[in-house]
Amino acid sequence: MDLSDKKILDVSGEKKITTVLNEIAQNLKVADEDASYRYDESARNIVAEKPVLAYILKSALEEYAEYTVQEIAETFIEGEPELRKIAVHQDHPDRKDAESGKKENAGAGMMSGDDKVEGISTVDKSQRDGTIYYDIRFLAVLPLSGELAEIFVNLEIQNNDTPGYPIPKRGIYYAARMISSQRGTIFKDQEYDNIKKVVSIWVCEDTANCRSDTINRYSFVEERLRGDFQEEKKNYDLMTVVVLRLGSKGENSGDNAIRLLSKMFSMNLSYEEKLDTLQNEFQISVSREMSEEVQKVCNLSTGVYRKGYDSGYDSGISEGRMEQARGTAYRLLDKGMPAEEVAEMVETGIDTLREWMEEREKAPVK
Image 1 (tube, rainbow, N blue to C red):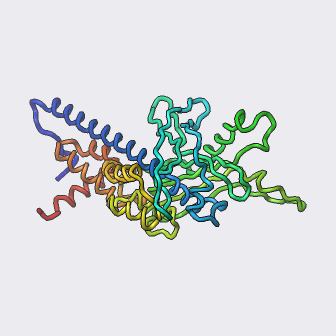
Image 2: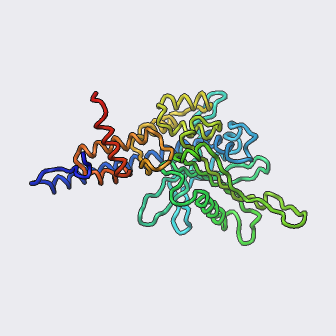
Image 3: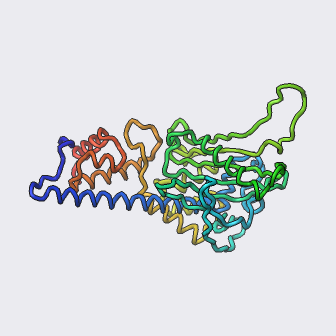
């Protein structure tokens, strides 16, 4: 079958039918975008739980490497951070409407999965001004100095780790904005000694296999080019960027943070298996609220699409996500949508779409 010739053949009402199909396609796209938006929101809510952030801090920052996850969650992550939704760009307004969560007691020896760092902002989807907000932003105590550091975590749940620019560069820009925004609040005029350290942490789920299950950290270091004078590290160690890449190897990683995040966003694990992972593998007491967010991620993941489905793109995308795009393509083709439009809708190449249809025709009838 030549897919390029696949159309709705109704001479008398072809224009009307085409219009209806375009409306169906648009409605499906809007529904997918809404599911994707809600998926991101639930994913951020899961990561904003203190125990999850504690696992990330332990893996990402040397300051916390020698402490237990429970110590980090209960002692070093600020208990009641300021509720705020901060725009990255200084010429855009901040959001003030942060949600609050309930506190529940956890069982002995378990970290409370309802102890959440608040101040999470939803991503602004406006095409007009392109405003971007920090996903999760909180304060944490640096163990040795006892000083507070300002930390934010950005989640790239739907994007691959090569979105047209290097992730570290974007992380540096975000961190620089956090430092400059301290002027007038943390320090004034020449009070540079009061600047707080900032940390930009990026979690990338989709990544090529060669970068899967990796953590990279970028920071300032001193080079003594002449003489023996050595500056105190606290005077220049003010900005750190960390990139965690999950990918196809993440679920079996030897690093706890990568393995935890990979399993929470996995399409290979059921809701019950994820709850068991949280409670038994990572010793996190799951509250009702956290349980609901895990359930949402499981339910909504079937409506989340990724770019790069073309067979030539080595993204490390899971087989489950590929099957989602394939299933949607079949439904749209069955409704009579032209192949070129279907390929655009599911964000794949026309050659890959032809391969999918050929495989479908060869598959045995059940």
